[in-house]
Length: 284
Length: 233
Image 1: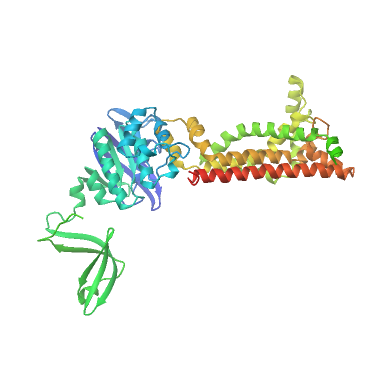
Image 2: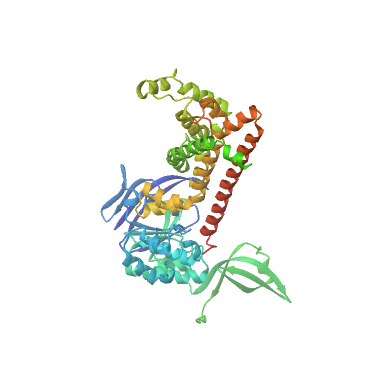
């Protein structure tokens, strides 16, 4: 069981705010941390890692990492950290990056095998693609067999295909090591696939805490599809109008009536919904 | 011509390079912790430290020389102490030159080191801490190997700058053969006595050596950049 009860004054981009977090996390839980940028997600991870100080208590399985008059050094906390920019050591090969943590060659080879990096283990990090670098970073974080794995938007710099592939690998590794994990993410599908709990922060406070299904599925129980998107354009074709809306990575066209377009301005956030009595679902 | 080259007294050059080597060695170990501190700290005294360490760049060598002379001469407490207890004089000999050069060349060591250390990805340093490594181990295993070009620049610039120093040397060391008469002083004296042939030869040697060292630095740094951006792999 991990108990976190911390607070800290932050001078963020949106002026002063107070980070005030009270959380209990069960062992083996995969927690996604969401919220607007500047809401304190990364700071929370850094406080857990011991890279920033804060007031309060962090208690991991009855080991105190932080209290009023003591803060355990990051070197001594049993954590793994995956940075958004990978933060690999450019002067070491892939294998050396892993062995720098500890000399467990067997574990290193095992991790490299799971993440399909065996062939590349003697290369330098600079010669790898973004996805490969992030896999190395993930392997390196697990070399310590950490009690707590922290990931700060690990996949946000990668393209959608690579994300999906890495999500499966993260899931596989989480199952194998059963490491309690906290991941900062903005991507609902990613959160849904990986996490079993989501905590949403806003201005340093927890505003939502629950299962991804409860929190992310906004149309629960109302029998319809509803998507939020951005209105990109309205085109007149013969006598009808077509609105082009960007929903996530996809563009869709919708027919709109003349009366409706009067209330719409290009660039605004719109919600697009329909009753879904007989939707078709197909594998792509 | 060959006769002339054979006749040349190479002692001033040897002295110059000996002085530069010792100064660079001392400064490297003094400046490394200081530059590391300056690159990591957000303390309010940082600008003051930066200003103090940069002073020798702006000050005329005569000002620097004057103060060092005052501080080290046997009339000063420091000079007196060394004379009394160690029987060592600190001015008008090689020791004095080393001390003066260390002050004079300090910014040329500290600034490239500091900017090199500042350019290191902070996340990488933190990642190393999380890997369980101490600050010292992180510095030697991860930070320094990744700023080789900055290290080399700092060492070479300090070395060359010390070889090229003139004003401070003149004030602290004078021109004692085989003790404080370095190459730059020798050239000054040849010019003063209108021995232009020797001044020419000495100057030409200085120009070629300096050019070759700088060329070496730029070639190495270019190659390092290629390695670290993955091109040559």
